[in-house]
Image (cartoon, rainbow, N blue to C red; front, side, top):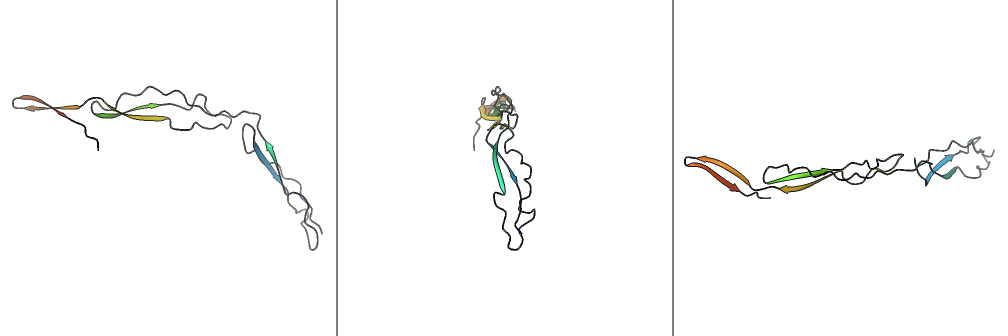
Length: 134
């Protein structure tokens, strides 16, 4: 007995949720009935594929402007300043891509040499010391 194709399965979901350029597939099997003894296999394709695409446009996220730099984290010597941005201009929607890169930036800052005051028998003594980077 020759094999006979089953009905086509439903189409899969489109590989893209927005925009064009996606693909979807559907299958069928040679099982209604399957080939037996000297019968012939089913003729034709087991798999169909077609282009698909949503009518909704993809909206990729874009970064907002950077915030102002924060104040230096140290009152003297070296510290860190920071600024931030958010993926909200616009935010990603309809399956669009997230913003690439970091939302934070850091940079070193230096305000002044640190001064340490010490009391001695003859009065107050100011000692300056340098910040040494290792």
